[in-house]
Image 1 (cartoon, rainbow, N blue to C red):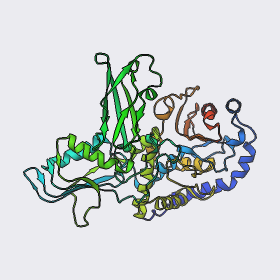
Image 2: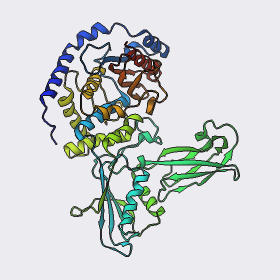
Image 3: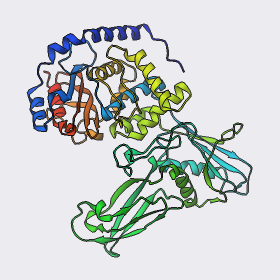
Image 4: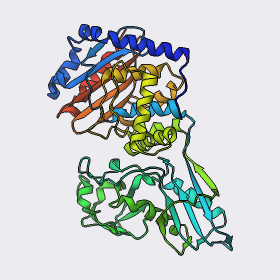
Length: 479
């Protein structure tokens, strides 16, 4: 789908930012001689050199020169701050009311509770198909009068064209749910959620697994142990490498009380097959065939479809809790919707065209990879991020974008990071092994709104967080 023609107001806005970009070297050199004292001191304590950070504090509506600009033209790895680009582009291109649909097809007659044929479920990128929503989908199948399927359940995941990847390839943490790969039929983030409930009477902890996975043996109880809770995960000695079983070599500390542990499943390619099969059986339904991958026959019409929550709600989970796989689902959806191809390259092309049209080329384009920031390749400058935030501030979807960002001292990844000044900030955070940052909006004591960007690329990058907090505090003290 081509981008909509620019209005006169959009053209004027773009011209304004192009002029600002051309003038940027002048104000950069004028302002980049020093950092606020508290920021400088925090960087020194963190052992993060000044030339490893980029910082910018600018007017949200772009009507006055920036208060601070430090190495703003340098392309850096933004980590999860890159989700700002993906989510704002999606709001602009798809609209805040956009929803994903998952159609379900019945290929055969239903007689006396039996479907004589196959059931098809076609994934179209919904990032919110968690266990509860999968249960509702299958309950609607039962609502068609189907109690037994005399055929197969076929999962169509062809909407996204992706090669299989090793979930441990990025950082060696293949069992961490944040490393889950995108999937046209993404179910429950390809994770098993284990709940441990200790019982002093039996000296065991009951282990509840969600979802049930067909063909996977799961240890239902573990012995209790005494002592402090401590590193209870290590004490359990979880064995997760075998796709056919999940068990534990250790014990569970009784002092822990009830705990929840999400783990990525060892064989992500078969996860959806096992989750659908396991839940269908747990719901008391029958299946004479198998759950398998395949494609919906071209002439078959859907019996019904289920819709996701609206995009404005989905991006709250993406930004407030920095959900990587949801961001990648959204990134691929942009290519699918705009280019009719669910590929990374189609999505990158879509983002590059959108950036040129909406943000401009004055600062140079970002380097797009998967849209989540879980990447060693994505790059963007502080000046480019600030301009995006300024354009977003003037846009009709500004309320939806801002409300999706973690609020300082309130929720998401900033719940424990309240401003010392008592001010208010809505900021996207990001953290990788050697990259960390924040970017978003800060309300000053004067009532003025500021765009703040701070990113560090360094082996000690995560230690720079106090410096970022100091910068946000400094920005809020503008009266």
